[in-house]
Length: 97
Length: 429
Image (tube, rainbow over all chains, first blue to last red; front, side):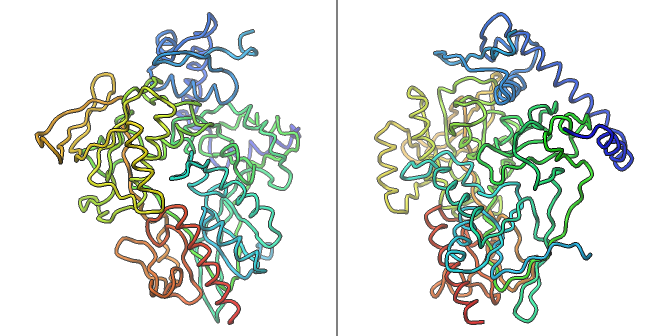
């Protein structure tokens, strides 16, 4: 694990070199956190299709499928076997708790 | 400058796609010392991101990964990834290359590839390896079978929360890492700089990359790959399983209006391959290929094409004039058939792939090595009837698509040719 003092010094020096983290980047990450939480909340009552997730989370369809791909890659969502035109996703066990 | 890394070898290979890997292996197996410089964070080039290859439908990574592993473990091959060749000069028969190792912001020697930094990073970004359809983190190992298995941090998108550094069990994160210069001395150079596809914006009539369900063939490869962004074939606008898919051939080749008048040689075959794979993944989907003429030139290719026809893939001889979309982002193709009725008509599909052409991956004339370029920016051979690798520059050889569009078998064969020419040249010095 990182030496806390060394890490603080590095981050301080980085801020001096590059200036503060841009507000746009902070806003981008905040919006991501909000969108991901909305998607995970939408799945708490069972598996859903991307369309249903987008409607429940209040997100555009293209953003929803992009977040689903990311959350799936990092082990927070899982595929559910489904027939028809739409796949279904559910929370991984660790997220469902 | 005393701590500048210096490497002295027999041959320098620029690029680590299938041609670069093969030529490096062939030279090293003959006893030469080789250094490969690759601009991306992993070796493997474009081939490692393909799903399968034509006409055998072998898994692309099953062919590429063993070569990648052989290169990385070969005692006579040094690989510099995430590094750029800034200049090469030739003096007294020796090439001196100035290379910059870009910072990954980690200690490469200490990293154990545990991915804990990636797991805890809170910033999601479009993953270029997945053609933007998937997500990666601001610190990420580029893909599952990347070599080396080392993460790269994107400093522009790092929010400096320090989570990666706190999670790292080896204390590898170095936020202040700087680019490192490397000097390479070599007796011969093999240019294996590969290709880029013509941009999605090349033809303004085809949506200028703004139609979400009009995708590139590399994106289609990722959709078909077992570990692709969605784990299955879905369309990027909404995650629906597409029931009707179209390929638009010559969308980036044989077109003077976009500066690519030549045939890119591989587009017909990769479209047919993807159509066959799609018909396996989506058995009830309608798949249509709009083409000018099918160029199935290699061994077994005509049979492959006939198999696709027999499997029910629709081949429509037509030129696509324009692509628009409806309110559900279904692409609408305005086509003019070349057989039967030639009246323009509009056809709706749910996903469209533009068969982009190939253009040079790098402008190697900037190195001033004497290797001339042809009218389209590919490396020109000094006499194609005598050798498939010798350029006008002494000690400079070309392999793979750097010489012009060609398929994987041809790239592998002439990578061997480039290696043999380089070995012969070095032994005469």
